Image (cartoon, rainbow, N blue to C red; front, side):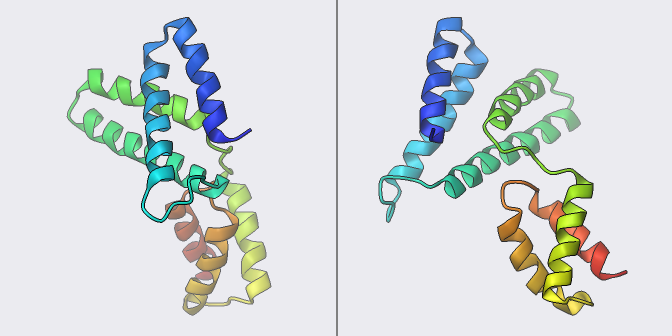
Length: 150
């Protein structure tokens, strides 16, 4: 089932339950899907990779806003962002643990034959593709640097 179909089903459920938070968030996701599908050069359909990137971008926006609102001690706005983030994360694939990421990166490093920081670009290129949607890019970069410095 495509992301759009899942969102539509969840929207119907949220409407029946009169869940304002879910409705607000699901409508935002639906709007992002429509924008993506109708963007210049788009074919009218979006693939799973694009869907995941779109959801990750939305989640990152909520996390950034949440951090700012917490720093400014605006709990009313922070709670709204937390609620939306929880709903967006339901549609994202499960994130890998730090240990799982390290194991996957170690395999990539061994496969590529990387031995120093000079090989960072090679490892990051492959790791970014293989771990897309499963791990945050910043975490991947930090762990690759850590593993290559050993």
